[in-house]
Each structure stands twice: as structure tokens, then as C-alpha cells.
Length: 95
Image (cartoon, rainbow, N blue to C red; front, side, top):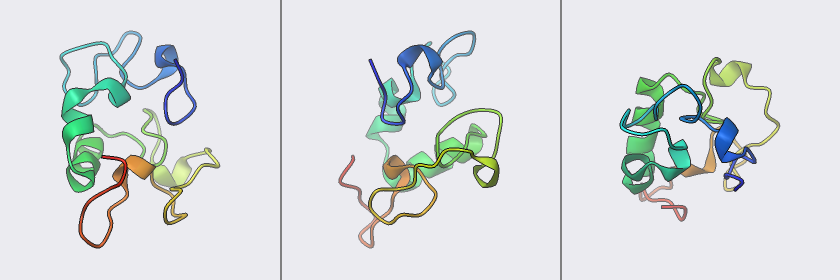
């Protein structure tokens, strides 16, 4: 299965030797984490910051300003993941 960022589940954050960076209760992709996916975009951003993941690709080992991904938010074209996009009413169509 391919995730939103185009990564397979096996290479996604939270798979492999590390538990989920958000809930630490499973070896699942962050895209399959019920806590992350049920959170508001604002709360997701907080979870990502606490887990020290890139805000753009949701990956370990680098910060957003070092992200080599060419992908940007499809809604506003800024360098953050679409699941973290906050609209003026603080909701997301990707909730």
C-alpha cells in the first residue's frame, strides 16, 4: 500500500524497528495511527513537532528546512504536509 507521501508502509514513519512516533503503541505508519488521523490539523502539527518529524514529509532524521521532497501542500503550496494544512476555520478537508 502506498501512503499519501508516496512511501510504502514498510518505509513510512512508524514502520520497521521504531514504534509509531505519535502513539508509540504500534508498528504502524503515522497515516494509520488513529490518534494522528483523528486529530485536528493544528493538533497534528503539535504531534509532529513533539515527535521531531519533518512537517513536510512526516519523516525522521531532518527538519522541514532540510527536506528534499519536492512535494508541498496541495491547498496552499507551502512546505507542509496537506494533513497539517489549517484553513481559516481551523479545519481540513483531509480530516
